[in-house]
Length: 464
Image (tube, rainbow, N blue to C red; front, side, top):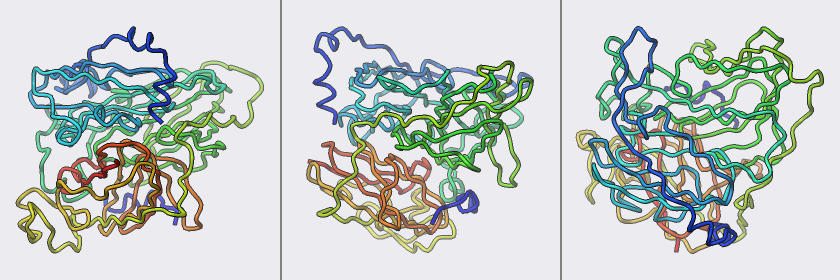
C-alpha cells in the first residue's frame, strides 16, 4: 500500500569501472585533505550567537565533493574533533575497505590521526558522506556533506542546485546544540529530531530563477532522524532519480514527496511562476502548515516556450533487476521502542527483559538481537540473488540503509520499484526488497534514524 505523510508522521561493478581508467590518471590524482574540526557557524538569525558545530573543513554543510562517473576520489581524512571518527561514502558501491564503518571495515580514526580513502565512483548520481562512528552524535553535530557524481552525458538543463536538508536540536536561549545525544526518550521514540532546520546551512536560503528555466534539484535528507514531506510551488517537476539511481521514465511530481533520513531525490523542474513572484520548495508540517526550505525569486524569463517532459537519465551499471528464480529468502523483524510489544531480546549472548535492555541503552532489536554481533544476518555468495522481507513490528517509522549495494523494492503486484540504498517503512508495515550480492565484503544494514541504529537496529551482511 502506498504510504502517505500521515502514515509516517503519526508517531513522529567496481573493478570494470576501475579498469576503464588509465593507470596514469590514477597516479596523477593527489590526496586532498578532508579535516573534521570544531568550528562556529551562524545557523540561527544574527541576533543569536554562532553555534559550535563539528564540520568537515569546519563548514556546514561540508564542502561539496563533485566528480564525474568513473573518476577516482582520494581524500586524506584528518580527525581534529575530540572523539574517534570515520567517513562513510553513502550510496557508493565502494570497495569494502573504503566504506568507512568503524568497527566493521576499519578502526575509527583517533583524534589527531589520519586515514586515506581511495576509491572509484562507478555510478553517477546524488550521494553524500558523513561520520560513521557515534554517528547519532557526530552527524547531528554537523559532519555531513554532498558527494555529487556527474553523468558523462548529463541531462538538458539550464543549471542545477544541490539542496542539503539538515536539522539541529538547539537551546533557544544560547543557540548551542543540546548535549543530550543519548537521551532515552529520543532513542526509544522517533530519534533525535531537531527544533531548527537549515538548507545548505541557512535558515533563509534564497536563490534566483527565471520563468521557464529548467533546473535540476539534487535534494539530500542529511538529518539524523527527520522525515521531510516536500511540495513544489511555482514549478512543474519530474522525479528522475532516487538515492542516486535513475528511475527510468521521469515521473511527474504531483502533491507531496516524502524523503526519509539519508534518502535523496533528483528532480528536474521548470519554473512556472511569473516574473516578480517566488517559486518554492516547501516542507509540509504536522499541522499541514507549509514552510519554505528554498525560495527562488523569479527575476526574468529564460524562454518564451516551455519545454516538454525531460528525457530519462542514462542508466547506471547497477541498474539491472535481480533474477529471483533461485533467490535466497531472508527475513528481518524489527521490534522494540516505546509503546512496542518487545518483552525481551538478546544482548551480549544473554536474554534480557526490556527494562534491563533500556538500562543498557538498547531499545530496539533486529531478529531478536539488540546489538550488532560477530554473526551476520546472512552469509551470501558473490552474485547470489536475495529477497528480503522486512517486517516493522514497531509503531515508529524506520529508514533502513544497505551499504555497498543497491536494492529494488518488490511491490505487491510483483513489479520492481526503482533502485535504492535506503527504504522508509511506516510503523507496523512490511516491505520486500531484492538485490544481487555483487560486492564482496562486510556490509552494514541499519536504521538511518541514527539513534535507533545506536540502540539496537544494526546488523550486517557478508558477501564472499
